[in-house]
Length: 588
Image 1: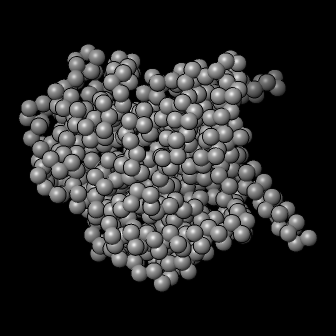
Image 2: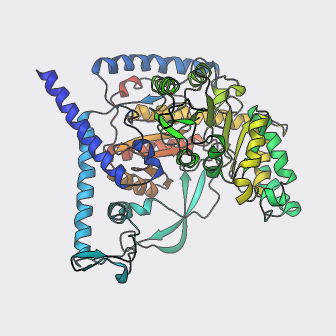
Image 3: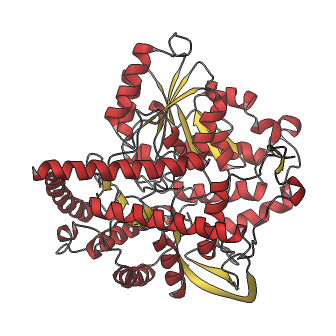
């Protein structure tokens, strides 16, 4: 009987949570929510497990922690390919989940109450609204209006009464290069973040929010100097598209260097990382094809899938059984719209997932790709440069053959301290993209100093500058990642992802914690990114920390001590596995 009651309570909580999440998703048309709008077979991963499976997971994790420490002494960075720090997704109790749902319910309830007070005139409405002449009018019991409303009622309420209250922890203007430290332009608000006034001062903070993984975002040094020098020869812009004015010699050199670096036959570069995904995916598939996308793929990939017109199915995050079931059913039943086989099946995954900090299970994905004769699109935006013994991404990290990945995509905005993106692949694929990609018709080539920044930083990573600077940066990033993550686990925080990942999501769960963490850490001169719905699942608000090779151990220890104090104050230490790390000796 007690077990039946527990099952019924779990089912009730799950049903309530699904209702709340689905209600928000249906009323919020944002790309990050797209995975929740897919067919019902592709639901979000289940965060509840039986107690027996949890015990088994704990014992396995304890063994893996011990093994990883031993490996760390033998080879500090990428050791044996077969032994890696596993992805971790610790589950919370159903009572905590219910509390998070209740906090969302309370937050939205008060938002509607405030909206009602504004509508009744008890409070001044400071938001942008339609003109009076555009408001709907009632004439002869029929509603007439000149225009469709600009915003849905829920989106307006969410933005004006939920987001606006914590707007001060977002959109912070910066006044320096985003290196290990960054200067924030100080501002104050007297109307609860509706407007800001700048004080004319700046505050230098430890930067744990930027994607500066290898520390190449710096105002001086060989990269900055070479980028500045190239302006005298090429200027700042080509002032035209590639199809009209042609490509630059320096960008052609970069494309050859990228192809050599990632191990592909050829490569093509673009001036914007987001457009590299969103504009080129439609060139690879059409309405007669199928895209199988990971549940937590980036918004640029989701947009590219939508623009392609191809059928899209979503598999649970890093779940190979879910992926194989979709592939098997797609081949067995074909396209339900045409009742014919799909012309092409494209698997789309990322190397490191920027919100989860988890690594894709590339060896098994490649095995399934070969088994079912599919194509593989790998987005290495966050992993290229940051993973692998020589910075060549998750392909090198797992010891895979680059030829097994059909489309290798990456960006220059993270590890290389620049801007833009690339796609590597066979000569036929790259030639096809050069001819049909919209970016060749509607966007300019990469800015020459940006190109030179990428060439200089990539050459350092490859050791072509005659130094070991690139190797040292990669090794230091790996040290920082493992040290920082293990210290946080020892304190009692729940982290997602792998200890090898420089992306460190600290789970806060409650949306109200985002504002608290952002403000309190800023008081301690730490700049951090806080994230909540719709960029994450409804019950998984988090503080996302991005580590860099430019961070010193002293800076990491200062941030860790500040987070430890804040975790005690906000009661955000939810982990039930702290005992696994209690006596673990963590070395940098």
